[in-house]
Length: 132
Image (tube, rainbow, N blue to C red; front, side, top):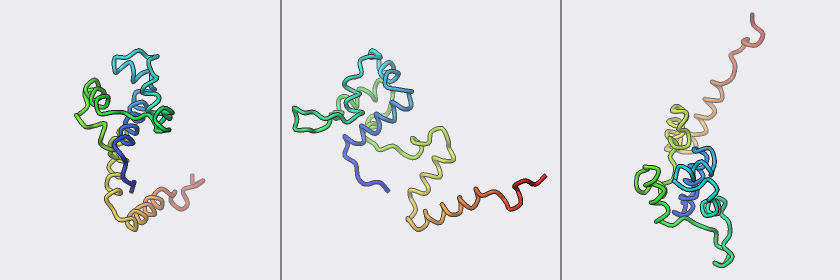
C-alpha cells in the first residue's frame, strides 16, 4: 500500500497520467486549448523542476489550474486531487484493474498467496512443451 501523498504530489501524478494517456505533453496542451509548444508551466510541474526563488521547492499545481484542467477535459471536480484508482491505471484492461482493486483491499499475507496462485496458473502444463 502507498503512503499518504500531498495534494501537490497527487496532482503531479494525475498530470503525468494525462500526459501518458494523451500520448505526450504537446497533445495534452492541444486538448487543453493551448499551443502545442506552450509547455513550460505544465512541463515544470510534471518534471518537478525546482524553483530557486522559493528555496528549492518544486513547481506545483495550484487549485485554480487543477480546476481549469478538469473543466477543459470534462473531468469531475476534484479529479486532479484524487489519487488514481486501479481502474485508472489499468483502464485498457478491465480484468487487471479489477484484480488490482481486489488485491489492494487484501492483507499483505493474502496478496502474497494470490500472487503465488496466479504464478502457478501461468506456468505451462506438464508435458505441454514439444507435445505433438
